[in-house]
Length: 79
Image (cartoon, rainbow, N blue to C red; front, side, top):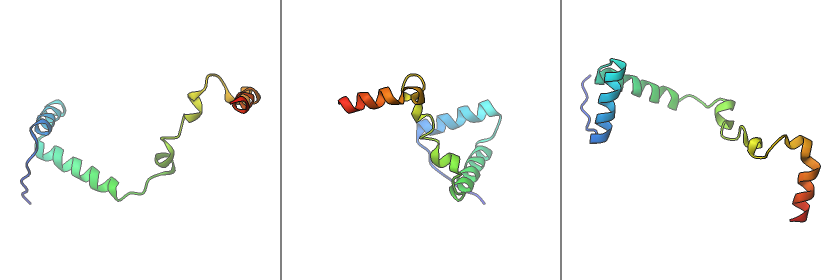
């Protein structure tokens, strides 16, 4: 099947650079990108993917929060 698309100049430049770096044709690169997009769009997210933005949230305080829980609670009570 033949398909023609129009790309903004900056996207076409990025595509050209990517193809040169990875030794792929533009057709093959676009086909691979569409396959990846359409395959992952229909795949449900894993528990890790759903929660990854919250991982490490406990690292916002210095040191181990568990060791300083009472001190942190006292500070919060004073506010």
